[in-house]
Image 1: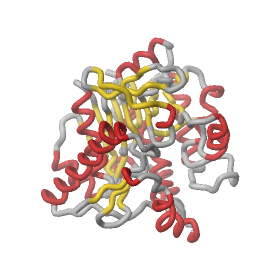
Image 2: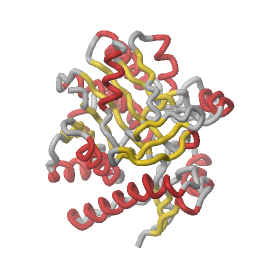
Image 3: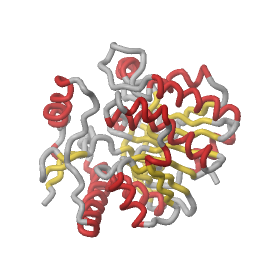
Length: 336
């Protein structure tokens, strides 16, 4: 089976993690999801939910001496980045899985991703990386230098010589260095820019060019939301007119700005995008939050994420950056 995944989140992200899981149930007849619970409350809720095909991995099980050592010197976000590659390795080694794909928790499947794995096997590859697909050549050049050409959102490694060679190297690099930095201050950016060297450094690397995988606010401008095909929303690439079913959408930076205002930045004014994609995701998030809060008497935090220890950057990320991203009133949702 190819559909073996891992993700990581804590109790403040558990609504998104469970929405991701529900989307897998809807789109895949058979799968495994290893959920790395990044705090005790998250672990307890997942264990009590006892969800089919979801295997809970606690920090006590997962964390090695190396991880615990670097945890002390990294922010929560930086530590999560450090653990993304290491979670894949843990699943493959500890559970003896033939393959594992890391996926971010703030994503939703709209259709079965098996076509992506079939293409990887057809090419005889052992690793999948997904391009950011920035909208313009100028943006691609700028963002390549800033955050890298490939996104850590859907990263597959096969348990073979080529796959494990690439994965072991990535894990080691992330242990050695994995920080949030300002543009131009370092060669790397978190866990992500290490992927820039994959195609040249390792054998068997498949760069996924399916436009339905990894659609996100930073690349949605390349496509138009097209008609439904077999109850699945599709996208049409603007410059080629190719049509792809949406497989996986990355709902980056969906967060509460105030107690009653949720911001889901789409970077588009398309009514169809909001109707077919964002409205559904937000409704699922709000339903899951209410379910968790009612059943477990636990209120999921609405605190904004901060990824740096620098006081000036911390203030900017917490109080200024979220509001600067508001480009469209359609992206705002009122929550009672």
